[in-house]
Image (cartoon, rainbow, N blue to C red; front, side, top):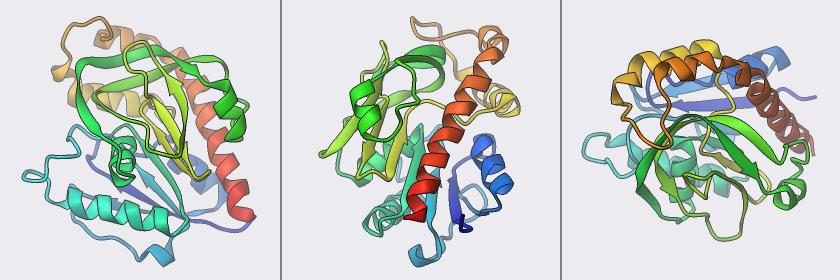
Length: 236
């Protein structure tokens, strides 16, 4: 297995790559960062194999407050055009959708906490993700949502939002939910964003979020299996 050069775009200090980072280091892959809260800078596309894009509280259109968003979207387009493996989570998924020309919009309700995600098994099997169960309780923290880009496979949905995941060209994956979070990552997002929780049909309390940590192991298992699928693709 060759050593991969994985680059991560991290928007805020409390939403890091968690299990993705740990998996990469365990496998002996290189792992670099662009941390937008420190400085903006990207390696040349030719220098990386994978691009991992994390979440954050900002929206994809907040260019005035976060002017680097335009540069980030263009960098994601370059990665897609360069046939890199691209994995986006939460805001990262929305940025991939925007880079592919799909609409990203502010939804009418928050989806925060542990809620079931229904997997499109036909699409998941076509994508090589036949290990995904028909339903899994995943962690969510968002209100924005996206349309499915043209020529993409819709992989997952929830009661709150029908578009939860898609795959484009076999190597571009967008996940609205968080398979990657371990317990320290869960504590970090609650500590830094918990004040923004508003009561709602698809919103859990901080106590309920932290009290359902038994879901983490299954979520992390799915994340590792997805990474291994892409690792195998990178060997071809």
